[in-house]
Length: 289
Length: 158
Image (cartoon, rainbow over all chains, first blue to last red; front, side, top):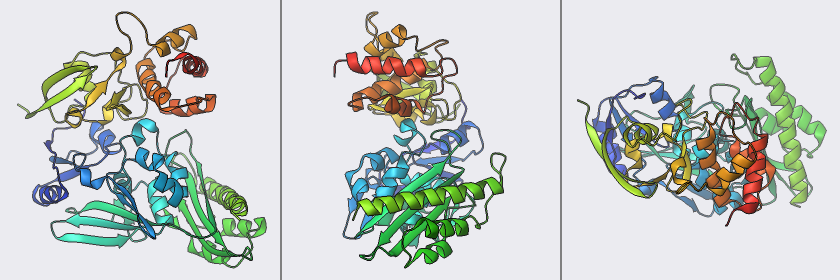
């Protein structure tokens, strides 16, 4: 057997899970297991207790309210992909979900697991950031809400304490005339991105940009909004010249380096993909008129 | 002695009950405890797709799921495809189009594509390639697999 020994717990409700997590020493939660199971198989981690969230039905839902879409932490990536609410309210999430692994992993992988694993190149944390999401956590001490902007504490480390469970993610849908685009470059289909870009764009009747959200992933310790590039685009017409300027600003963001891609190569990708995403969003905006 | 858990699952239509340690993967349950060795293990960390089986109809990697998590589910493996020596239409198409060479990856590919064909209408080569993206094959170069699936899609009863 590849995984190291652990004691297994399968709570049927969220309070039960929170109680177990608070009481058991050296316990780890398992959601979809598409990152945790490889880590167990490699014995990168050896928790004493594994608390399985898969039996908690109350954590799996996609609900639309006036301004937000609330998604339960155990909602599968495949359910996001097939959801009519996601397609209508969060179109760039729908576009990005197809880049997460493969159908076989999306059938198990969850939104809560993806946020908590917080791989810097993962799609869902970047999408949550693009839609100004809020994240609810629950523990025996109660419920806590934080913004997605505050959620990353560092490399693959969410700002949650050892006794907290992510319960729900609420994403703010855009209204009015707007469009979006997602661009990603990875070495292999379904692999983690070297760089990915999420663009949401809104324009007024005079076609000037009224609102923009520009999020980069894969470049640093966590996905990030590039607010100086967003500010630069506000009030401008959606022209290639304006987009080139914004893409150039994005490429000045500090980029990480690893054996697969140098910082310079990442910066090149940031510029290319940002420009592509902005141009595609603008084309769609014209079509949405 | 490691603590064991009772796992009751329906595998290929047969109800099975076994007591296994919590850390046993579904793949190892199928291979070592139920002796269904058609499910192959390549990488054991979710990259190669050789261990793909259907759990309640959904294609999943059985190396990334614990056997205890499959309690109460219906599992289908490659052994479920043929009956009494008669091959599944997809297996027939694989044979006809030389869609396998060494055959190691084939069980996972077949189970992935059985779910894909069940859920798809108007199958295109591009959609087949997308469906295949989670399965590594080092022999065929995929071309003949794509041909086989397109053939099967046209000849399979819906």
